[in-house]
Image (cartoon, rainbow, N blue to C red; front, top):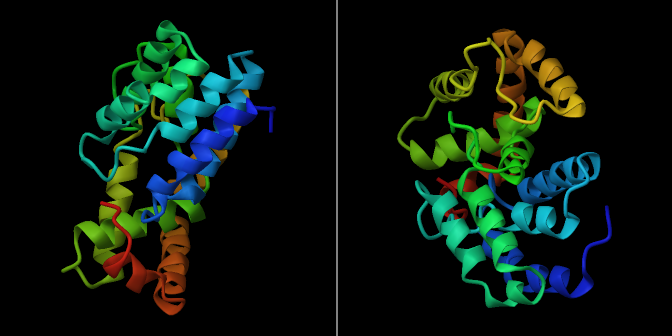
Length: 223
């Protein structure tokens, strides 16, 4: 990964990453994937690498405060972190805050700045297995009374298909060629519903058999 300011990175590792300890779908598995995507885009578009890294690291940090409005709470955490003033101007902090506030994949309005477009695109799962793993966690937490795989799968599938835009594709703001390629490969597989169901069932069975499902229900805080 591109070299990030060492002290800034240390601050984040010690004070921000622990906020994800009790999350599964939004835990460090997800955060590290978003960081990787965001740094790829920062390199491609020659963005400020430290800003890109911070945005990726903080983007879900407000989950434990308010799940439904976590992007706003995450923006507040960043904005109120006085340590960041050592490394960034007030304008840079404002840009990062707005980017985080605009990052949700379900958002239909273009983010206010290009960093917001990048973090929104970086937040997308174009790997069916990882997406299935994360969605199973969320649906189990939100609907614990639903006991059958089939009902959970239909909910998950309908939700993701709702992200297809008017052009008939899963939306990307940046139209980055690497992400477009991943998106197109993902979409071709995902829209084969029988194939998607097979992958989700594999991840469901794995979570059930290795104890992850029990931890999802009784330990992790994702919703």
